[in-house]
Length: 95
Image (cartoon, rainbow, N blue to C red; front, side, top):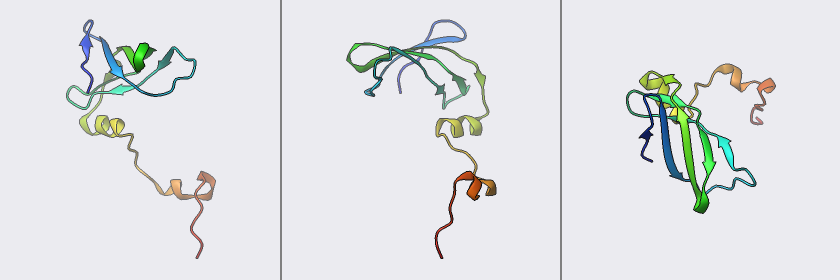
């Protein structure tokens, strides 16, 4: 887990290693969620640095409850009956 550097009460910075292909992009919008209290979340700006490092600058946007924060961090969602309809793109297996 990259260390979060506080730049103020609501602003933070990180330097992370991200060996992904960005193409010609120099900056992208990211997303982060703390998995320890106070479970803050943010949509930071990520700026590409040399040698596959990334500078992350952001402002905390708020907090979430523990369960909601962990679900967000894992990108989990509850599946409903409506997710299993042909209109939603699901096709039942042949009999």
